[in-house]
Length: 197
Image (cartoon, rainbow, N blue to C red; front, side, top):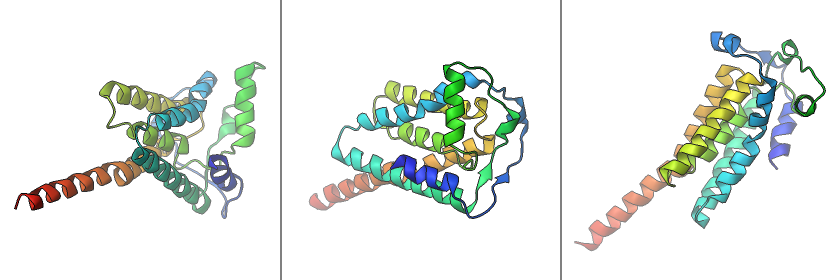
């Protein structure tokens, strides 16, 4: 499902993809092809975070949040397609990394930049562990951050794509994880207050 929802707008868009502004950060970050493996690890990050769900309630929240995030990001890609000048960063060599990188570029066209769904899904998965032990949460948060940096060093995204992905993840974490907790806490406090009258 993930591949279908993402790759369809990646190949079919209603307008010509636009280049985005090149910031000083984009210019300063070097092209490091080997970091594409960190970029690939996003799929393991999301899956492993899902496996840490401790209850059926957490499972439902995770699935709903991830699905809505994916659909929202894909809708943005369809309505406002953007592109990245990958041709300025040719992949050289014949090793496994070069082969994997070329395959990625063939499958994933540079027409779904803003927001970066790698960043959005990685951070949403990490944020979903906010109620777990702090050490566990910190590990997944650091992992998500490394994926975000790899989108820049692998020259898959602009800095603004990364920031937009992070903002999207934060918004859906609040909507599907934080606010329900607040509502449940308020409901419990109201029930206790009512029973004590």
